[in-house]
Image (tube, rainbow, N blue to C red; front, side, top):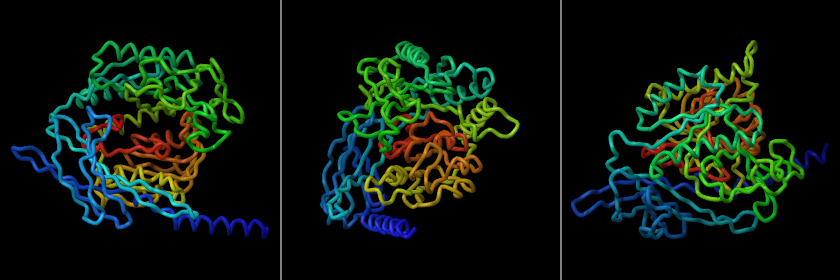
Amino acid sequence: MQDVQRWSCGLLFLCSVLAAQVPPAQKVAIPIEVQLDRSASGTRAILRWQHDSEYTDSYTVIFRNRATDPQFFVAGTVPPGSGGMFSFELPLVDGTLTEVGVVNRFVRTINNQQVQFAAAGYSCIATDPPAMPFRGRVLLVLDSSIVEPLAAELAQLEDDLDREGWRISRTIVPRAETFNATAVGRTKDSIVAWYRRGSLDEPATVFLIGRVAVPYSGLYYQGQYITPPDGHNPDHRGAWPCDGYYGTISESGWSDAIADTAGVVRQENRNLPGDGKFDNVFFPSPLQLRIGRVDFYNLPRLTPQGSTDRQTEIALLRDYFARDHAYRRGTALYNWSALIDDNFKTYPELFARSGWISFPPIVGRGNVREEKWFPTLDTSSRLFAYGCGAGSYTSAAGIGNINDFATRSVRAAFTMLFGSYFGDWDSQNNLMRVALARGALTCSWSGRPVWFLHPVAAGETTRDL
């Protein structure tokens, strides 16, 4: 017992030392304010930010047109001692979004090693957007079993999307409760056929609704990617859910030829040659379609006494679309603020930077606060929320477990969660899907990789990121 106590005390001491050395995640966020000065000779962008004395390098100011520029251009640099302001001629194109940013870096000594941290702040500028923008085409891919019971909700969704400037189509596909390579192929064929029938120059989005077949991909081995994204090797190796497969039109580059089964625990992650689960760790080409999914299959913890899992699945979808409708019509009111609950503060990767960089351009720097996920979101609302902590499929330390989520509300519209295992979202009582079922409208696994949401401030959708 004494050995255990000494080990525990040593672990606590190590964590406290690391916590003192690792900078807080907000340290790598540079909230910026943007002012436009328009005249007959052109438009100047004036960027302001608060200088941090630990940043010893010059600040680099960058910009790009989100519609045409895959990479940023450098507008100039600002020496660290000259304050946080830069003004430059900004080439604006009416009706498009211009993204601006400020980047820098600093060094901390951690465990007697010099560790470099990148810092950044971004914002988006919308110039003369149309009063009723055309957002593009959207395909609703519907699980065949939900079409009849949710007929009214689907019709309402289509009406809402039409009002927002979308051109809507729908296709009905077979329900697939377990992995089904044939169903994945047929669903992909339906999506590709729809895409090719329309203008290839128009933005295209696919919304998967219900238990649509789940593609799988991923082969984690020496030479491609040594460990799974959550670091749990070998038990979480193999294939993970990959809806991004539906976002690539060409089949070129997708392979299914290598086995990865050693040490894999879940049958869903086992990947064998020719089984329909792909080998790719990275997308073989850029995604051409934006993909979203709402799927409440296999969440038995949310089934109330006297109901069946199937009845609950339909009820959860119905509730989700009622909340979605309320938000789209402006009747769902959220506090104009953002919550960050960071339980990985000793990790130099600074996972919570996703929230600290994303949220200030949207809700304002003073409206982003460190708060606990629960009970905060059960009793009051936030427009955005980010939470991270050591995870399982059904929990995130410091955030909550399946019982917390099942008995409390998540009163945040747009959420990001990060922790081990539950990024593999096609699992029973999965934490991310339960968050959607309990109140969130979106949920992404942000940490490896990191998602940035700042374009939402200028009218982009979460699928545009």
